[in-house]
Image (cartoon, rainbow, N blue to C red):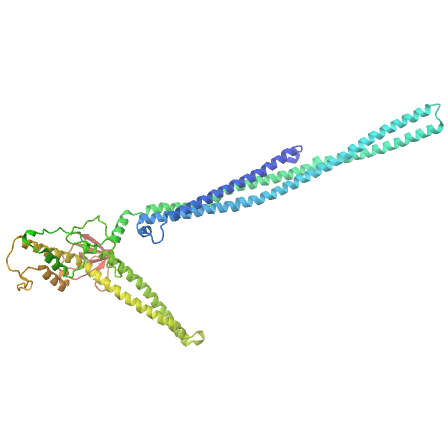
Length: 546
């Protein structure tokens, strides 16, 4: 079945149908364009949303990214940004593969349809022209036959008229013969025009128009097929990016599963742990005994002990430490002395690592320059060795400067480590000294005090804190050996203990824990023979309280 055979007389229907098909294509292209605009706006809004909630560089939120829940939120923002990119890709592919492609094809169809309809109109005009000629010859033949019939009747009437002359009769017969001849010619012309018209009409209805209709049918079927491909592309375009979108969504899910509340709590402890001990009980100061409180405070203030939490926080020893009070911002110093011990050690260690990396970089550059200089000396055509002298000198100066900084920060780190290890014992000794003095005064003791070396005190007043601190400063190593173990640990791996201050360890060996890890990854242990040193915390299994 085809249009040329079954719809030979439905030209108007075919014209309207093909026009409606092209309008449908235009409508679909417009629909896809609007869909791409929606996708682009959606992607733009997603990108603006992720940009809005992404922390700015150097802000407080960026510093919080060390916590898993904050980092997971950033991962979600990154995944949503990638997701927005896929929505933009959908819009771009739809615009390229559907809108632009089909629009171009639509223009070709419009031109083809216009050509076919123009051919049909030409054929119609040709047939109408032939019909007009046929009608004209028919009317002429009709007219001339009537005139010939009238001329024949007049000639016969003249011939029968007795009054008519022979010349009149002859003239009437000639006129009748002429009219009959003209009528015969018109008859023959009419017959020829009729034959021509019938031939053209047959050509028009059985050949020309069926061919044009079939071409229009083929064009319309190709339009439908192209439109169907566009429908399929509409879904395939999105289906092709679904695996990547799925990965983005999997990334969001993974970000949620990566949140570890326990690790976040540990990270908070490591970041803000001060290393200070909690404030002890306040001593009873009996003013009824006439104790010179100012003298007591001044005697303790001249001991040169390291600052404790109250001093670092700007608090007075005689006042209680309020946990929720606002703390004044300390002055930042180069040696990080404004920070608590734990945080100070970490910052100093971080600074040392950074300086070490810079120093290694300068060392590598110096070695490279020396090698290049040696090559230039052996092969002068490759370059002038003297041209490298400024760079070599500058690198040497940089190395010297970095080594100086390295030594400076190492000394500060050593000081910070010594203070952190001894701070608890110094505070404890101070508390013992104050308790001893208060106890003596409350009991009204009048016996003559002795100094630590067995002689009488020149002041006549007991000052055990002076003796205790003097003994602690002179015999620091001896005091450390007397610390009782706080637990045990079992070695899971061998440790050579090659660095200064460390101790060797064999797998399966049981050691006593003398000091817990302060957040730097090292634990202080003691062997049964009394040898002490530091080992990596991750190399042992620790059990405290035993």
